[in-house]
Amino acid sequence: MAAFAYVAVDRSGKRTTGVIVADSKAAAIDSVLAQGLSPVSVNESAPNDSRSGGLIRRKGKISQHAVETFTRELSNLLAAGLSISRALALLKREASNPAAREAWTKIHDDVVGGQSLADSLMQFPQAFSSVYVAMVRAGETGGFLHVVLQQIADFRQRDQDLKSKVRSALIYPVALACIASGVMIFLLTYFIPKFGAIFAQFGDKLPTLTRVVAGLSGLLLQYGIIVLIAGAIGIFVLRRWLLTESGRRTWEKLLLSMPLLGTVMSRFALVRFARMLGTLVGAGVPLVASLKTAREAIGNQILADSVTRAIEQVQRGTSLSKALSENRKLFPASVIEMIAVAEETGRVDQELIRLATTYESDLDRQLRTLVALAEPLLLIVMAALIGTVVVSMLLPVFTLQDMIN
Image (cartoon, rainbow, N blue to C red; front, side):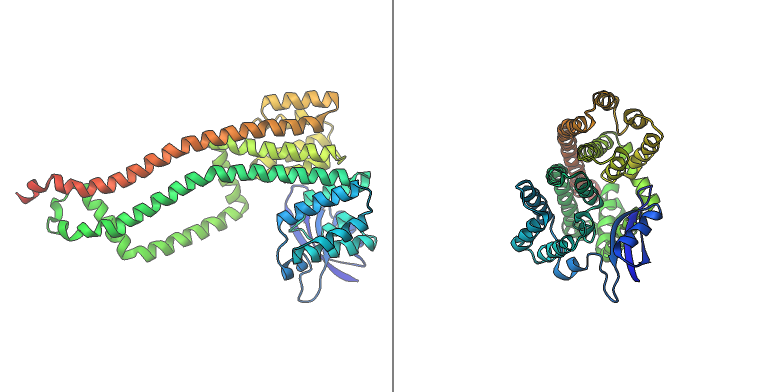
């Protein structure tokens, strides 16, 4: 008997961990499944050693690029007619990253020893997600593993491209906000104190705006460290709150309620969900299992809840289009109609991929619109803040004669 540490997902999509005592790894997986859980990783525990991804931690982290290369090359080798053991042996020899080489070696040894590729990949959850493993398992079962691996590689590439577009769209607004903050700190801590001695002799005769800005500058100089520490504590508390279930849901609900940003977020979730579901269905994964896996790709718990309700309806025999129609925020009426037509023609997987591609282009336009609106708005805010400080310093000059009299 040995102890096996597991990471699993329950029916609601919540991750759970635990330890099971069993005769073998296969028996441990059966025990996890018997609890109504979907195993993500099951690894034998060892004293003073966390076997879950232990190889990765000792040798470093496996990069996403290494995983993508492994996936695409393994697909090409299998399509060329090589056996999986020979293909894995070639990949482990060619791996340049130490962490990847050791992981590929472990996967090769397990597969040669009779373990399935999906079970071997489960030992490295940091590199191979539950979605990845589910698709590989479907490919092994259906006998089209090389096709599934190619679909995984294409999906990961498109998903990374989509994330890159979002990150690129945020670069300029974030840079403007950082510049504005830096300029304000410079004005309040260096520029304004230069006028402090000049304005001190006028006392209460200074304009109200000047006194407010000068007071703010003095507070920042005197209590700057305290403000910095308080800000760091506030950020830490906020991050901890966002990690909680209620905090994350409150934050996601707030973002979704914003006029333009909420639409962009829902379209981003739709693109990821549709592409993942279409890829899984096209790979031969049953619809309910595909829905449960694709739900994890949404990235927003509020929107994922609606998919959870849709899964329950599909299990009761409701059509996919009707089950998804309850959430118009995530699935517009036009999307529901196209899915309904695809169900009638038996082309659900192809239609979902087409929808993902179409809405990805629409998302790209919405991101450009959002950035186009954010740029002048940030410039106006930055100009207003800096202008307020400058005007507060110039007002005493304009009223100097009155103050002298």
